Each structure stands twice: as C-alpha cells, then as structure tokens.
Image (cartoon, rainbow over all chains, first blue to last red; front, side, top):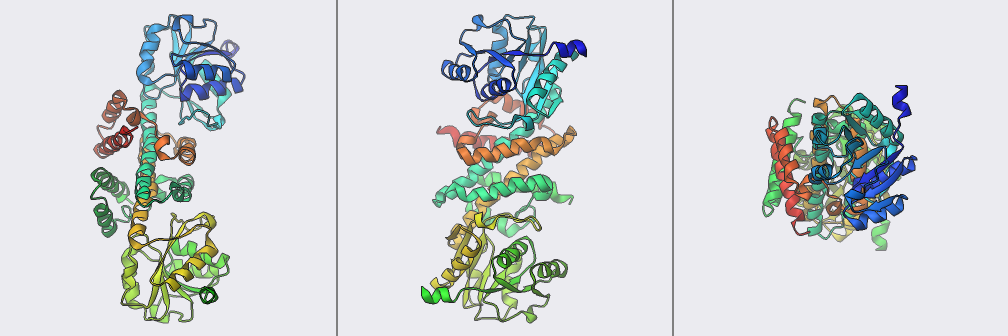
Length: 265
Length: 265
C-alpha cells in the first residue's frame, strides 16, 4: 500500500475538449492535479480549455506530452478506439471516461489502463459540486485501480469500484433518469407552447417532483391517472393526443408500465 | 370593481381530505381564510385535517355548514359529480380543484361556480411554498371569476385565468412533466436494484437534470445516445433490455421521439 500511495497521480494529459473534459480539467486543477496538456482536434474548444486551466495545447497526437502520470481520454464513445490506436505511449496509464465502453478496449494497446466514470450530466461553463458526484473506477490491475481510486477521491467523496458490465447498466439507468426525464419535460413543454404558456410555469412542479423523489423514493412518489388506474382521464388524454401519434404512443406505453409497476402494491 | 372586492371570500368549507384538500386547507388558514368545516366520508383523514386547521368536521353531506363564502370540492375526479348531486346549496359559490374536469360539471346544479386549479403535485405533511405555485382560475361569471382570482392571489403570486379546455391540456402537460418523469426514474432505479446499488447515487444526477432544465430549457438540455443518434450505444442498450420487453419498448419509442424532436436542429 505504501508503494501505491507514494506513486500518486500528480499530473494528467487530457485528450478531448467536450463537456466531460471541460469539467474534469477544471476539477483536476482545483484539486492541485496538474493538467500538462490538452490535446484535441477541435482546436477552438481545446485552446479555450487549455488557457482556462493553464495547460499546453496541441491538436497533433504525435506531439503528445510523454511526461504525465495519467492520460485521460474524454472523447465521444465512437472516437475512443481511434484515439487508442493513434497514441504510442505503451507504458503509460490510460483511462477513458465513458459509461458504455468496456475497459477491454485498451487491451493490446497499453500495459496500464482503466476507466474513470463520473456519474453526472455535464454542461460546459456550468459549475458543479464535484464532491457529491459518484465516480466509478475500474483498473486492469490492483495497483492501477488503487491509483485511480486515490485520484478520484481527491475530487469526490463518493468513489466506487465497478466492472465494465455493471458500468454499462449504470449508464443505461442514467439514460432513463436524465435523458428520458428531460424528454418527458420537452413533450410537456410542447403542449404548453401550443397554448403560448411559458415553460416557467412548470418549474415549481419540476422542483417538487425531484424533492419528492428525494424524500419518498420514485415508487412512493408516483401519482397521476395511471397509478390510480383512472381510465376516464387516460381515455381523455389519449383523445387529446390524437393528432400527435408518437406522443400518444408514449402516453399509452408509459401509463401501462406505471400500472404494471404498481400492480403488486 | 369596488363591489367585487368588498365581497371577498373570507370563509370556506372544504369537501374532501386528500392531498390537495390537506394543502389548500393549510394554505387558506395560513392566509387568514377561515375553514369553517372539513366534510369527507374518509373520517380518519378528515378529522386529522380539521383538527390541524381548527375546523369543524362532518362525514355527512346533509350536515354541511351553510354559512361559508365558498365551497371547495377537492375529491377524486370520478367522485366530483356525485358530490355535486348530493349537496343542496344552490345559491352558494362552488369550485372544484381538478385539472381534467370541465367547469360545466356544475351546470344545472348551482348558480355560482368555477374552478380553482393549483398546478402542483401535493403530498400530505410535506410543506410547500404556495407563493410560487401557479393557480389557474375559471368562473361562470366575471364576478365569480374575480372573487376566485382575488382569493387565489392571497395564496400565490402566480394567478391566471384559464378555460376548461386549456386546463385539461395543462393537466396533460403535468402528467408528462411529473408522472412520467417520475416513472422514468422508477425504471432507472429498477436497473440499480438489480446491482444492489442504492437510489441515492442518482440524486446528484437528478438535481443537475432539473438545474439544467432551469438554465437551458428542455430542448437545449437534451443529451445522450438518442440525440447524438449514437446507434452503437442504442443497440447495446436495447440488447441489455432484452429480458424486459416493456422497458425495451419504452427505450425504443422515447429514443425515436428524441431523434424526431431534434431532427430540425
């Protein structure tokens, strides 16, 4: 253990300049981890990020700084493999930050690797409290895993180990909890827009929706016509959605699923 | 106008003792509107509510107090008509608090009526800031509408007039924004439960989801594989949901809808 702690990660090269890279770069620097270089083909974003966090910048992978303790690949899922194939630093420690890509993507390319998955939705220039954000770690050896968990615990109070299969399930849960909830609100807003009612009328309801989830949990917080099995209202709503077949189908299938989930109650 | 303001609503009889009645009763009393009586067939809830807000209680509709300025029917949608048929106070001002039931439900039974619709999800014993909650008013005459708007403005800073048709659309929007978002979180939680991961790991993500809605609006806040049209990840997720056909169908139809909505971008 002493040996592991003495080999802490003190410096990083950040590959990518999207939302996750932006946030990780700032979180590293705030916690005294040096970001030696930001490397990205999207020059505009990367230059701004590098300037912001006092790093060098390059848009050429063959100019990658070879002196960092860790290389963080934070690019779109479909671009990860290409980045891995391009970089020739076989002895170095590499991670990606994706929920859905297995750690095995690194196999055969690098000796030391892992995954550093922050469980949050990131928006550039929108600060977050990193200490609350769960960070899930995987490593290809106990040493690499411990190094990454130690680094993560500099950023967050909620660091956990997870394998690639469970991480993919976590990401799927996040798609429902974030992407799909957001789309339900988009659909709600499309109804309001028809009446020229501003989105802001939904905000007290949305705040209370989340507050109830905190205090009651999602099963107990469920209200509405589907959980009451109020067929009159459900029929009325389906009729109101007659001209919007996709929304009507969503209404129908989600209402059925709510009924299913609460059958046992 | 002077005449209308001088005929303010100072006292109320509350019919019902569910979540909405509980909250309205407390909000009235906090704003010096006397709740003369709580009347409900569900004795246990109603007695507790009446005691809480210093009202009389009865479980018999023929013992209804006939001296109040307003009678608020806050029962399940399917029970409203029966309550209306039962009560014989034809001269008095009546409202219901439902999103989906048209004001015309009162026609032929009473001379003075309207709707008092607070746009919020209510949970007993969970206090709310009423001043933020939009209250939507309808009245069968300008006088009744003005009386109700004046009463609503004692409770909330956000009082608006709406007709029955638009109120039903508002309620439909609330089903998407509250009931369906909550169910998406229930489904996310069902994935976590399989891995014995506690619901609390979702809370930072859910808080940020709502915070992004506030700052960006739902269209701009959309992220995830569907809006990126990342077919690899979508296929992976559908495969992971193979044993849960209903969740897989929801995943599929919601992803399609996200793609549709963002096609124009």
